[in-house]
Length: 102
Image (cartoon, rainbow, N blue to C red; front, side, top):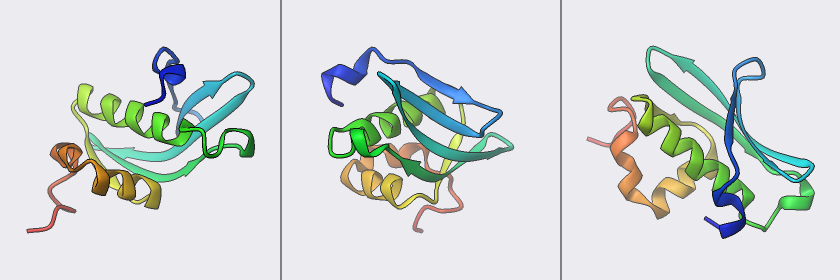
């Protein structure tokens, strides 16, 4: 994660059903769905001003940490999250058993 994002807080916006990372006046977010201690990550989006600057990676990393720290399992529907998991297979430890390859 880029150093500039480390101290920024992750916000779980339950009304909008998204995890948010506010960077200055811009917000990068991941839409989610939650049920029975499972979290489905559906869509990640970074505003044009933050694209290519690591903000999407930062919100993904912070969200994965949140999922793990709070005892959830992950169902990755978002292509960006799935690609991140491929590059960082150690995070497969939080992926729900229903979606892990057997």
